[in-house]
Each structure stands twice: as C-alpha cells, then as structure tokens.
Image 1 (cartoon, helix red, strand yellow):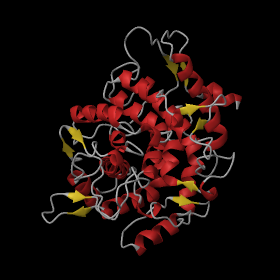
Image 2 (cartoon, one colour; image 1 turned 90 degrees about the horizontal axis):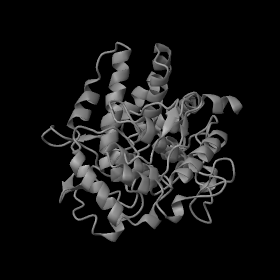
Image 3 (cartoon, one colour; image 1 turned 120 degrees about the vertical axis):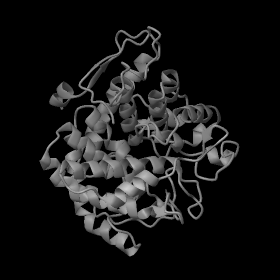
Length: 395
C-alpha cells in the first residue's frame, strides 16, 4: 500500500484559503484509500464493495466506469488490467445475447455475478450505456502505455463492442440519420423503454466509442470499418427546446415536469464524462447545466451524480458551479468520517460516489486534452492555489 501512495496522483490544498478546501481534500484522500481496497480486484465491484452485499451480491456493469475510470487519471492504470481481462471470460455469453436479439458483436449485460449471466430485470435488460465502457477503459489503458501489445490484447473486445453499437443504431428512411430507438432505457432510468429515442448522453457516448474503436483499427493498420464511420457521422445532435437540451428526443418542457427532473441528470454527462462533441453546442449545454442546478430534484439523485455535474461544469468553464455540485448539501452526497458515500440506511456506503469524486477532482486539476487552463475546475479568485502531481489529463 505504501508504494501506491508514493506513485499515485497527489493534490495539495495547503495554500488554498477557501473554507471548502479541507472538506474537498478529506474526501479525495479517503476515497483513494477506499477505492484501492474495494475496487481494484479482478472483478468489477459491487456498489458496496467487499463490506456487505447489495443487489443480491451482484455488480452492475454500468457502474464499472464509476468504480474504475479514475484509476488511470490518478496514475494507476494497472488496476484496469485484471478487470478488463474479466470481460473475456463472459465474451461468449455477451456474443450469444447479441445474436439472440439479432445484433452483431457483443451486448454486455447489466447486473451480473462473476459468471456474467444477466439477471432478470425490467430495467437492466434495456440499458445500453454500459456498452462503450469497455472501449473507454481499454483506451485509458492504451494511452497510459501505448503499445501494439495492448492493442492486440484487447482489440477483439473493442471491435465486437463497436460492432454491436453500430448495429444497434437504426437508419431513418432517408439513410441520412442513425437513431437510437426503443426498446431502450437510458441512464436516467425513469423514461419509458417503449418510447425512448435518442437520449443525449447515449448519443454522445455512441459517437465517442465508435470513433475511438476506429482509431484502434488505424493504429493497427487495419482498414477502416465503414459501418462504424457511417453511424458515428450520422448520429443526430441531442434535441433541444427553449435553449436547453432535452432528457430524450421529443420530451418537450421536460424540466417543467417534476417526474422528468428526478434520478440522474444524465444530460450533463454528455459534456463532462465525455469531451465536447462537435454536435453539442456549449452555450446550450451551459444553459442546460444551470437549469439542472435550479430545477433538479436532488434528493432523488445518487452519489455519482454530483461529480458528473461537476465535470460538466468544469469543461464548460463554470468552476463555481463545479464546486457547488461537488459539495451540494444533499443526503446522498454525504461522506462519512471514514470516507464512505452514504446514500440511505439500506446503502450506507456507495463506492461509485467515491470513484466519481476522484474522477472529477482529477479533471478539475489536470484538465483534458487540449485544455489550456491551469486547474480548470477551480475559480481564479486567488483562494484556490491548488498544487498537484502525477495526475493524467482526461480525454
């Protein structure tokens, strides 16, 4: 454990005079410890890690990003290796699932045990946002140590994932647009699986994942996959109305409906978890972010929503909103004295919150590729003299 602290990313708030700095520091130091002992094994972890069972002892693959995507940013990409290798053990099941449903490639499950069998669920069977996670984590591993060996080791998983993603999108009658069509449930799970079309985060993640998979082919000097290129280029921009992005296509006035501002404010993930897509207008997303801060039902959210919103604010040059989101006074954003992210009496610990918090802090400090602002997640008011080392820029 000592060697981990000596090589890990580090952030120093000792010269900061903003009174919020000590609590920010407490949370990320304890979260580093907790995610190492709970999240760095050979399986994607449960939300409650090794402490006690949650969701019948199963882990959720859509949470794998939140458990593990921060490791590479904090200079420990090696923790991703065994977990990525686990996907190979369930590859055949995922291939069979996709084939049974009429798709190419692999469809990764949602709620599983070590054997990878998808648990029955009226929600989990329709979720799609876990699909690009494999590509995201593999790309992090490659960029940490660019090599042909890494490309060859994971190319089959990356390419099969992209095959499903491209096949899942459906061309409209003109052939000029590819849509994400029902039945599907987006990460903001309250939307109806039978009518949900083109959720904004999933559109952005589909584009990002297919683009990166294509880059893997180029790095390996393989011919371009035309279907991936066509789909990624023809995905529509997220729908907007009244100057803000909607929760799904056709959800007019969704911010006026109390039901539509519950659960995860996933629209902010489209610019936050991911780099800015050319089809997303930063001005419209900034309006959306501010409306989310004003109107969202925050008690209905989960622990990783606060860092997600903070990452969106950071990329949009709204550092004060980033801090407000990261430290929002809501029960599910509680961090106990031992560092665990308390949600409720049933979920007294919640590790996706800790992992998301670390992801947000690294972005707020080190920024992302092409970012020219030092410590972009902190206000330039003289109170945030943040020092750091061994953090890796985000995508």
